[in-house]
Figure 1 (cartoon, rainbow, N blue to C red):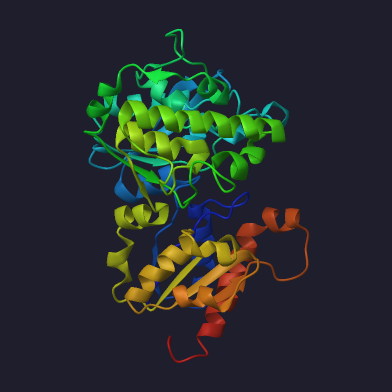
Figure 2: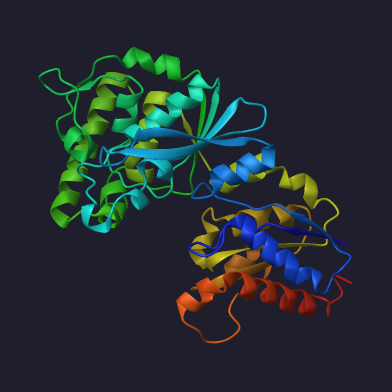
Length: 380
């Protein structure tokens, strides 16, 4: 019997690799002779880089870059097997996790370090870049990234704009828009499940700004700054980013990458599944087990368990999802290809306890699930 084990990370407790190992342990307690194929997943957020590096026989490198508030930071990036493709996680160089809670300030936070990682990838000979944009601390449309790449974003005096939302407020023009042509020779894919527009009630500033430390007054300024950014882009580059789905992703970096670098927005889980070739392994599989920390109706919009379930459904493979927690779900989630959902915990417990014992709990949950499945006729 062939069983595919393809979980996402259980955020705060297990990486996707650790989760896959735990599920395998639980399954083997009952199906000792099963052929288990582990395919850890990610959907564009934390872990995407390492998942793809391992899946393709690539390597993870590090570089000193500019952190979100200007201090030097050490960031990792991956070169995939073959050497043509780099994977960059925005959170490594421009992430919220790099900023102390009381220092969060999207009016000043920059993506300059993300641009520096792109430069490193180009220097390594990469002509394809996958950019995971989850967990950013920024709300400046990728302007810092563009400054790092050599674009001259200037104010009325002709000086380069500063970092963050404050810089976009003073943006007057792009002095060297011809540089866009050089970068559009690259194949840049933005791995994300975010479809938000740049502006508006569900845009970058109003929807996500408060998570990054923006006060109500800051949110209004950030909205004004991104509106100014969009006007300058339309005038100087001839590109309309206001109606771009995903333009508001990661503080508007989606709009910046699309307009200046010719990047395209892609489903993070689809990118990962394609490069890890999980579709090939689904042929002849009896079951796929996936999971992550929380599953709810929002998981339908690009999360790893639903993405892999949809692929498995095409191959006629039933899918079991083991989740740390189950939020509000409706029956429509079962239409995605998920056959059943099981929970990690086996008794009422504090969150800290569940996190601390996640590996053991996940293995036990996997064993319970396959024992129940064995009662049915689909797997013998």
